[in-house]
Image (cartoon, rainbow, N blue to C red):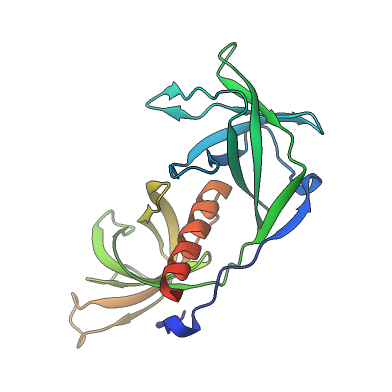
Length: 234
């Protein structure tokens, strides 16, 4: 894993391209992220895909806040984003109608085109972020996240994390304008080196690999990495 990154050589996020709406292959229950289009309010909500009739409408659950559905007025414009395969797809659509029975859901206009951006798993960003790691024995260890990609992360911990190949748990704070969430993720310890003089409690630098990530976690990590790359490129 890379231990340093020069901002002047920081890679920019992959450019998006316009593709046909047929590229959007969703299954009932898949998570999409939604926010109001053309507004300074960048709050992002999660909804679930229910179904679609090509050229007619797209149906999703209504977003919830404190367990209550947010009502959507017909004609309101929203941006949808979702991860499918190795691409993030985004499209803007309008509310056709919302219903509260038999459950809270809404129909949106069917998208005519999508903005597709490939997820670069190797894109890596340098960070200095405090996190917690849970070892196999259940003990929590304070650590500093040094760099992050969709494959794994490099961190510096206050003490050894375990043996190579051990499965660990981490809590990763994802802070964006539109979402603030702590991701609980499984990682595997791939390498570890002491930064001290051989004492048991010396700090260590360790490389960890993510286990299988679900689409929602991958999408949030992708947004977070791209956001940090953009900040460091300014």
